[in-house]
Length: 269
Image 1 (cartoon, one colour):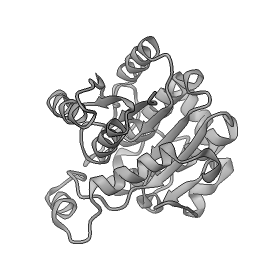
Image 2: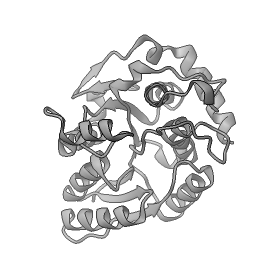
Image 3: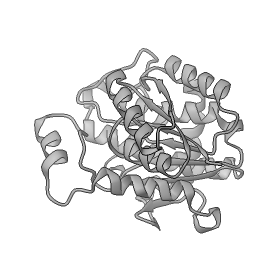
Image 4: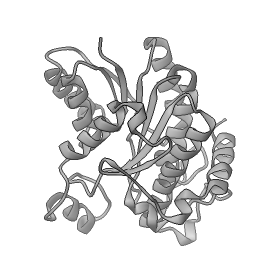
């Protein structure tokens, strides 16, 4: 019997590539995406990869806590078990944007929303695994737990993105300390050929630059982290390829991780 896998950001890129691989292995996959058309297309691709087995789907925008809570309610009411939660949804915001919940959109979409979803599913994930898609871009930014609303005057899309990716690494490590019954890891997928980024130059780079990692290769790493024997993984570890790596000093600061956790819990309650 296959595992039950929830993949956020599952309608394109790394998430879709991983979802197709999970389906081909006989796993039951639930795809979460923001765009209805892309989500429908992804469902068709995963269905084909799984030999006709229908994957689950749910549309949710992670810039809305209400939609994340609705997603969690749906998953809890329809899935008796969740073996793997792939926190893969994420993106970059070109200009400063504050969400209706009161937080800078990058940190909400990339960190606070996955934090909320994971904590809401915490009991269903006992004995399971949480895989968080981070990035080497974490070197470019450090989250400030006391300023999750961001700074409109000093906003930088890359710095905000880097801070949110640092938050992913800190969250994975802190979850491992607080929830030892759940295997929690984060990883850098490589510089993946995709529609990632904001602005013409950045989008052109991520589509056409030489040497980019294919979504399939990055998806394979996500699948490996989700399925490798627990004893082979470093609990709370950050992976580059199939090897644990040492992130930047601010991304392994346990005091910052604890403070970010507490502030994130307050922000999402």
